[in-house]
Image (cartoon, rainbow, N blue to C red):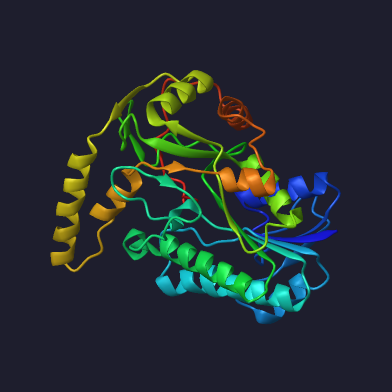
Length: 337
């Protein structure tokens, strides 16, 4: 078998390539021009998802496609995000279908789900987010791409959608919270201690990708892929114990921060400028939910092979940094959720 992996040199893409190669699958790595090759990949293809000819050439002669590429920066225009994440997704799905590709796995995001205030259990049948545009171009474009992928499946394309949780793993410092900051050696966490983090180890997602490529009943379905829904206070304790870092944490009152964001947003609007943070973004980032993965377990046969403590241990070991009492300057939220 031969698979094309877009975004092959990204954090998740590299682990997917590694997993496929371990199974004896030949891999064609699709990377942007000038970003170089990928160690271990059978073949490297440089191209742009905006180029019809390049996309057609990339999918020709492969059995599977894993679409892990996405624009995730915070500075691009809406048009740039729409081209990369929406039209790029449509272009490669249709090209793959026309080329006779047997299976297409689209990597989506938990950010497509609506999370009602007050907490709720989320399944793949839960409604889409209705206010994604207020959260930024990335969330809005990923939701549109998710919808598009499932519509293409309804039209006969062999598409499967995976929605991973908050990704962490080797080569990347694990996130401490959806949003956190460091001031005078204190970690300020924008979350309640009871807030739930949907943690997903990167290699567990790669396992789910392989199952989605081979499971006969997967086509046309979306699957939530979350290893563990862990309470923030428990996660912080595990993080600190395994990292060996010594710092104090402080949970910020969500209501107070949301009010400050609302005041800032309205002030910036009067000044005809875009606010760096909005009330809705704060509320969305702090509304807790429980993500049900029973469909992935039942249909794909997926269960997370790497536990949270083991995943954190491998992540910190990969950084090759001695434990320090001084935390990093800041930790940003992962764009995968």
